[in-house]
Picture 1 (cartoon, rainbow, N blue to C red):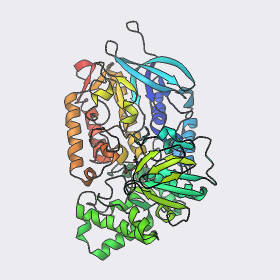
Picture 2 (cartoon, rainbow, N blue to C red; picture 1 turned 60 degrees about the vertical axis):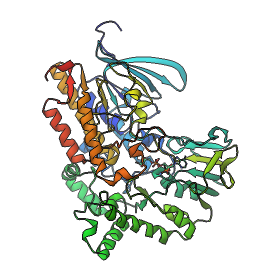
Picture 3 (cartoon, rainbow, N blue to C red; picture 1 turned 180 degrees about the vertical axis):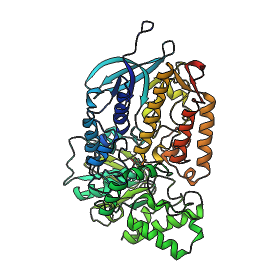
Picture 4 (spheres, rainbow, N blue to C red; picture 1 turned 45 degrees about the horizontal axis):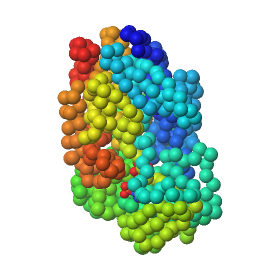
Length: 544
Ligand code: NA7
C-alpha cells in the first residue's frame, strides 16, 4: 500500500446474518461506505445454513425480531409463537430487500485473513470463494466481525469419519437441495438443541432412526402454536413499551421472572408452578424462581420435575433412564426446547443408543461400530454442535498490530473489553463476542445493541477525526475477570458446556458469556461511551 492511500471502504462487515444485515443498514444510513462479505449465497447467517427439519427459534418470534424500524415491525406478521427456520429466513430477506441491502453484500465469499497495518490504521482482508482459487484483497478502516457465536460447526473426534460411503453431513450444513430420508436408515449423533429439534421430524420421514446420545440434555416442551390473539393485540398496541421493557430484563426476553427462592415455597405450590410453566412451554420454565441457576437444592427441584416428566412420557423404562440427565444442574448446559422429543422414543422405528454405555469405536464404510455391535446406516447426521463464540473468529487468520494472530492471542482463552474489542487488534469490533451476554440473551436484542454501540462509536471517532481505537490490556483483563466471577457464582460453571469451551478438545476452560444481565451490560456500555471510552485508546492515547 502506498502511504496515505484511502481504504477501499470505511467499514467491512464480515457476515450477513441478523447482525450484518442490520449493521449494513445502520452504518450506510450514517454515511459510511460499507461492504458486507458473506460466505453463503444469501443473507440469513445461521438461519441460512441451518435448514435441517424442525429447525426453529426457541425465543418467541415477536421478541426475536428487529426493533429498529417500526414499519417493518408492524408489517411483518409471524405465523407461530416460535418461528421456523424458513420463516425467519424469509424475514431477514424481507428486511434486506426493504432497505435494498443486497447491492452492498458480496456473497459466496469467505474472508480468509485480515491484517492490520499500524502505520496507516487500516485492515487488509484477503477473500476467497469456493468456486475458484482466486484471492482478492480489500482494505477498510474498520472491520466488524458479525460472524456469529454459534456458526463454526464442530465435527466429533471419531475415527473413520471419511470412510463412510453413504450420505453424511452436519446439521449446520444441511444440504441446500434437501435430503430424501424416506425408506432410509438414518443415524443422528448428538442430542443438543439441534438434535432434539431434528430427531422428531427425521423419525417421521425415515424408515429407521438411530439416535446416538452422549450426555442426556434437559429439554422442555415448546408448546408451539399460533400466537395467541390477545398477545398479538397487546404487542400491536404496546409495542414500544414492550420493546423498552425487554431492555430492562436480564435476558433480553420478556419472561415471567420469578422473584422468590424455589425453596421458600411448599412442595405443592412449587409443583403447581412448574406444571403451569411446562404447560405454557419454553425456557420461561427456568425462570420460575430466582435461584434455580444459583443454588443446587433449588436447581434440583426443577431438574427432578423434568426427570419425572421424562419417565411419564417415555414408555420403555430403560430408554427413559438413558434419556434422563443426571450429574449436572438443569440449565448448566443450554436447556433445549422441543416438540415431541421424548415421545419420539415411543415410536417403533426409533432406537436410542447411549454411547456412554456402548462407546462409538469408529465410523466405517457402512455405518457406526460401537463397543458391542455394528450399526449399518444409509445417512449419518452429525448434530455435534459448534466451536462457540470464538470459533468463527479464530478460524480466520487475523493479525493484529503486533503481527500476532488472534488465535495465538486467545490461546489461553478469549479476552475482550465488553465483548466488543480485543487489545492489539485495533479498529476491529466484535458483535455478540465472548464477554458479552451473547448466547445467554435474546440474540437479536444483543445484536442490535452491539451494532448501535459500534455505530455510535464510529460516529464519535468521525466527529473527532480519529482513525484508530483499541481496547487496553488492563481493561480486558479486568472485564474478563468480572465475567468469570459472575459465572463462578452460578451453577453455569458446573456443566461441561460449550459456554465453557468444554466441547472442543484443547479449548481453554473459560466461561465466555457475560452473566450480569442484558440490562446491566447495556448500561455499562453506554456509560463507557458517555465517559469518553475509558478502557480504550483512541489514536494512540489522545484524549477524546
Ligand atoms: P450442542 O448443544 O453443542 O450439542 C451437540 C451434541 O453433540 C451434544 O449432545 C454432544 O454431547 C454431542 N456430541 C458431540 N461430540 C460427540 C461425540 N464425539 N460423540 C457423541 N456425541 C457427541 O449443539 P447444538 O447444535 O445442538 O446446539 C447449539 C446451539 O445452537 C443451541 O444451544 C442453540 O443456542 C443454538 P455432549 O453434550 O457434549 O456430551
